[in-house]
Image (tube, rainbow, N blue to C red; front, side, top):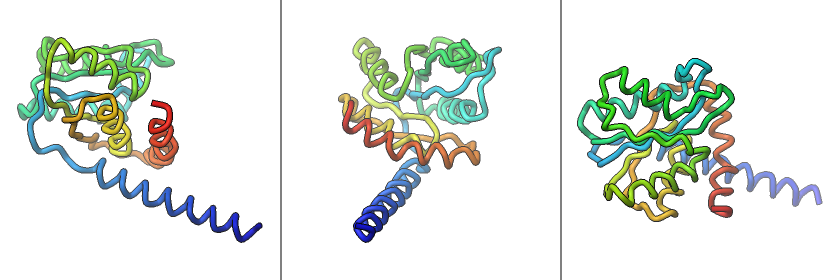
Length: 187
């Protein structure tokens, strides 16, 4: 019995390691082309509407894509977290404060998770038939986000990542392992 448990534990550890390598390699690729819209996934916003360092890194990556004319629009998506300040509103405020025309920003405050963001973007896109999108999030989150967009029918999706890295990314990576497979099963 012990031998079987060790084998199972070894298989799970190897699976986890391969998954983390795959997610890191895919997530750390920088977007080099052009897309119609960048989709920024939310994260923590503080009480007065300031972006957390994790979210600021994501928004800064989208801002660079916009400044280099790699995207025409920025779709910001998040929910209303513990601070009670809507994440997407905070992202819009930051982008406008950094020179982005407010008409180039689409706000989605109902993006409670990656699935909701993908669903909301696809529903919005029915009236704005954009053909390509670039997901902008933390590197460890890219693979799951691209997966759910494609599963919901938006197949021309690329990715870019935050250039801000934190020791907490280790926990984010560990969380992505079960989250990715949960998305495969539930959504």
